[in-house]
Length: 304
View 1: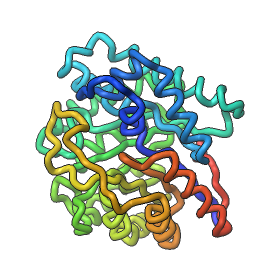
View 2: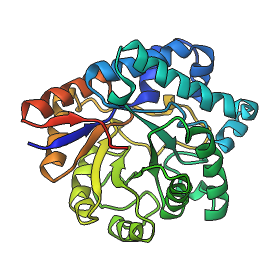
View 3: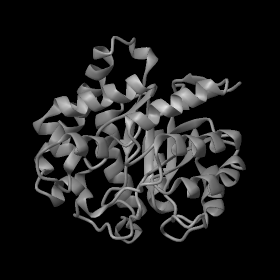
């Protein structure tokens, strides 16, 4: 029997499914500012499914991405709104605040999956510091998510560690199970670099579950707490900066039972943090919770 941290699933995609308006490059932020109850309901759905970690709905709320689409004046409001909604969702579920970990979100600053557009270290550090400054007093930990390259990831880790918060970094890999970041950098090399300024944990996210499975032995060698949360997309190769989620399609071979099969493989490999990314719904998380406890493990929050 082991303690397993159960994360939420694909927040942005679930918000998109529940929104009836037109999609937008900042879809989850636009919806949150216009219809905050949708975001609140998604947070609640994931908690009802068994998740014990909520990530703030700020994945696309970076200064650069907000400015790209004319939302720069709402950058701070988006951060504060996401924090309020996460806390309201916990309260609405009648849970003590200590029962749920709120994770701040440090995402790719310019675009997902496109490492060529990432900033250099200094500019990345400056922008991550802006996000950290607005989230640090309201979150328990920071998740550095969907990192395509070491340089941007290292800047995000540094920004979070400056304020003394636990930080967990997640890299997105090529879907061919080659254990390469989308930049082409080898995962084993990147894991070695973590020793320079170690985070509290390392994960793989937003790629095929098959790629996450292949990465588990590499993460295990890090000596850090590790885990994974995969996506359910057929491919992200066509996704370019400024496009909407309409460009992406979901796999049809990842029902909740199949996704849980993959996740149990990760746990068998030593993973302690499990969840879902894009296209992984509350139904998937509920099946994960059932299978985790059904195999004798305990579901816990993330220590902070």
